[in-house]
Image (cartoon, one colour):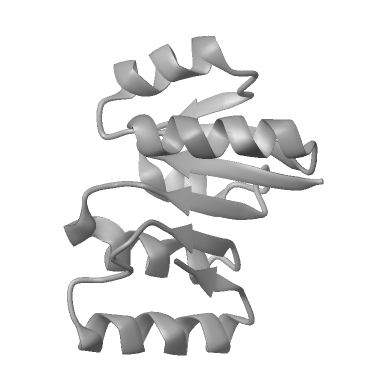
Length: 119
């Protein structure tokens, strides 16, 4: 079972969590939101082990194997790099990044750390 963390508490996140839960192959392990109260609210609706703040603590956590990023678009590259450098697989909502340079940086990081990156 893949232990997932989720960044963002919007409707996309909820749809992904519902689908993941139905599959029985993913475990919702952690949630992060820039507003911790929103993460805690979402955690009351799903079986979540922990809400994290700050984000760096989540990236370093041994509780997760992968992260689903549904944050504002401008944060996708920075957050993806943070997790991939900690050898976490990344599923990132579209757009993957703000520009081609960021995409190239993200791909290089995924290759270097031997993790999966997809949109």
